[in-house]
Length: 418
Image (cartoon, rainbow, N blue to C red; front, side, top):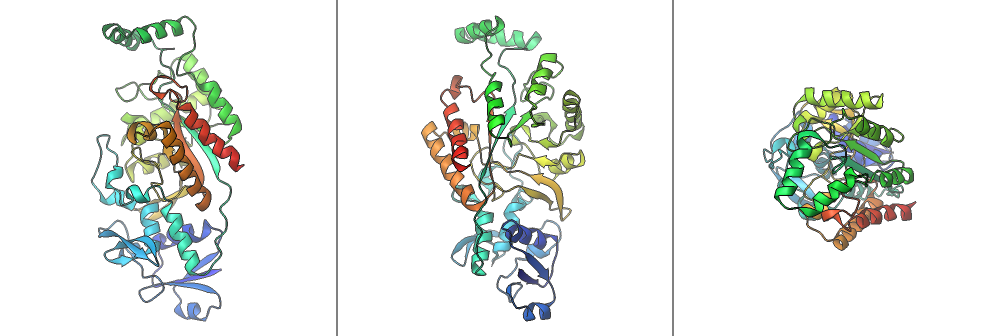
């Protein structure tokens, strides 16, 4: 056991040390009793002004405060300093809880906190920094670092647009046809006719997704069922064939909600979408991921938690692969404004299909190499290798021709790890 002395013990300090030690199977205890600490005959750590690690001021302060954050060095390790105090424990807490997003007003065109504004930068984002800092602390205490458990491959799929042509009718279908005719898009005109005549829709990759579900039981799907808008373009869930598809794909209850673009900050919309999906599946929905990865802290997670969601899968950047909260491990969400850890679980993802091709503009070969590097990081430091694809991106169709190979390569890494 490790005994930790602190001048002051609060929820922030407990949360940080729980991640550092519990996630690595090391029993620890916190105390404010200096005499008991000094007389303890075992491994111990003083987290105090004159101790082994000097605590940053903010970690002993309630709520969210402002301070200067800079990169620094602790015991030959990259680290963060807060108002000039280099503190690996506070660094773990700062990144795990996404503290910087509370203090920053930076937002991109979709209202998201932009990767470019993060202290992680391109040199840290592909490292599980919270796990690395935790391991560094264990090594300073001369503790054995346990080997990470075998990495679980966790494929996830967002269903933003169930079909390219099938089941689409009315005004939407007419506008799409008109656009193709005016643009003389013969390929799409021919393709639409073929699907309407009974051919397979190019977005119909559900048999492949079912195969992946069978091979990787942790697979999850997130279904967009919000009302149609410019950014929410799925087929209406009133269509019986669409409902039947959702039911068929809910193998082992893997379908969760993909709250719509329009739902950000609007509890009534999320609640309505949740109710609709629950009626289709005749069960409660506890898993969600935001469409466009669009969320605000703490508002979005509070709303989801209050509605009965228990698991959230949006924690990652659209612009860059890697570890937005410094780990691939699932963690309980910490509400910084209320200063408490919750039972609402955050499940980070490591990469998204669109991040590779559209944001980072990597080739298929470069994407495979990047994924291998990220997988090795998770293998070394622990967690689940969770990633995002879409039904329309895995069928070697259109701009995604050849990209199915990237998904298959990722799955192969998982098979090799079994």
